[in-house]
Length: 293
Length: 283
Image (cartoon, rainbow over all chains, first blue to last red):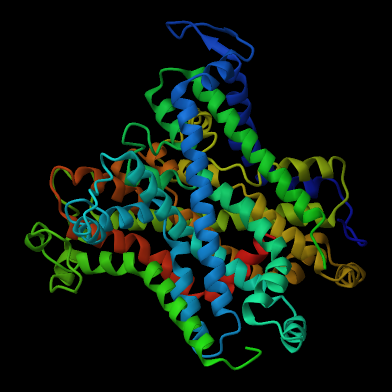
């Protein structure tokens, strides 16, 4: 945690910390405190006075059908996108692991979407699936599917999920590949000598040894999908049709920008912050006692 | 592999090829669309092979934008804004966090752990979560529609502080002791020993933070409402929304290519550093 040989002086360390502490206080703690404060206040009809309301704002968002729908959408979206991207990434990483010819080319062609902004991922996939001009939409319509994600809520949610998973694959691929490279070759060879085939080796040796990476990725994927997906939803569906793709982080923004209910918007922010903090703690506990074999 | 099974090797390459198709198809379709003229784009399904209007389209969006009613200025100034924002965020984050990591690792002072935890809790708290309170702070500080407002709130980064802290802990204690014996003060030690040792870490972080800065979307959308401060990633969403009235998909896709090429290029050129930075920063 700290060096044996440290430097003396009191003013200097504080001066070194100052820039980060100032930015953190002004742009993290102050706004977070404001959200917390507003979430327990209720404004009168004219927005002139506010009074303490206890947990009333939280009670009202959790009894609001729109909010509960948004929770459901977020859950479906995150679970589907997370499992799809992790499965594809693990499959590709297992295939690319220790390949000799063309390894560099495969890696390069698979990792670039990391650098694509979520909003752009939304634009790209929206274009491919555009009901009038999209290439994939054309194929789907030729197959007899009535494809129009602007009016069909399930199709919209499917497309948002797919675009998010596409963007997330490269990230997961990089980590799975690093995890696979860290597995000692001798264990796999020993299993092969004992007669275990490639599939058996994967499920009984490689997959369990990868579990720390998998768990770590699970948490990080949830964080990414919860918060970075704003751009995908905003560019692709705008939360529609009829709130069918309105994930929580999108709803905070859309409710807040309408500016009708400050308390409710603040309460939604607080719920999201609680989720992030819970995930951070999970991640930290994982770092503390990482699984060793 | 351990044993030689030709069918397995074949299956490997086949699955990888399918994966690459899934990953790269959207980019291909986008690129192809950006090389056709408008008359081809309104003819029905988007084309699959390159057309001959590449130079024309890119010149048009860079210098003129999408014209009247497109809600966005030409792409060139937006790309300059994106570059400024991305570089300021990346450099700012690195500077701010390397200094605070140095203080936390190399000094003993009251409330050291308090500061450490204060930075730690912001580790995963993205700006999207507290968007309106943060917006209000920036508005009160009169920083709306300025490069400062677009960048400074995003500069505090626990991730970078952690990476540097982790790295400093692996630097041998003997280096610090030797420096002290030779009479070097803390800042001299920082400048002449720690900074040169951190070179690869700084470069790796720069790649990651540059991408983070370039790809910002919601924050510029609400803070940079003046056309002068549009970044290209947020600008394109305005174009897509304008498309309902005048579908110029070829130009929108050319803009999309221009918006995604710089960060993708950074990743491809600095691939080694990027992978190292990503894997280490998050662990």
